[in-house]
Length: 109
Length: 122
Image 1 (tube, rainbow over the protein chains, first blue to last red):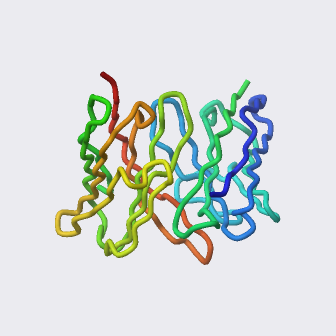
Image 2 (tube, one colour):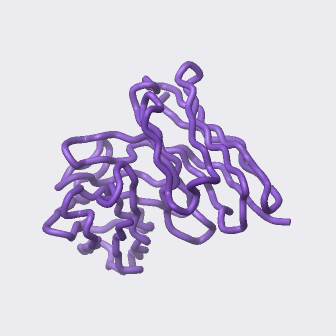
């Protein structure tokens, strides 16, 4: 099965910009989706496709994609953005399976 | 209110069985594929299984294939996961998640329940 690679952790100063990346062969075929998971809560979809936000997600969250890499950017990070962020896509080896990245812990300083 | 509510988790001995349920409400359940996703304590998300809206297509992660069975009852707006031959590695919070095709090659889990905890221990 495919794998998605994420950096384990990143920190960002309050109000600054942070970019999280996700790499994997499946991203050459399927778009990534991004999930925010705060401590003790269920995951929440924040970005999908090239750069689409579900209703209610602040516009400081944006996405991009190129080749085998997808990115999630938080522009003007807020304290409430501190969370784990997971990328996911369909698995290009077998359909319809899914794969998740290991997650990136975002700390807002 | 649109929601998914899991139940059926608990403490089970190794090699035991458990059946999880997910009750859907507030949307037309029989038009959506559904998934089970789990998260071991302190670990990341792991996709477990998928079932199409009609139940005609089913897939499993390699880690559970042959031991877990996903099913659904569209008349009852419910999703199930029968788990057999459980081991310590199956200890996790199990989420049900709605599957949506947003566009060509764009698939997401757009709704999640709060999860039900399964602990496998003697």
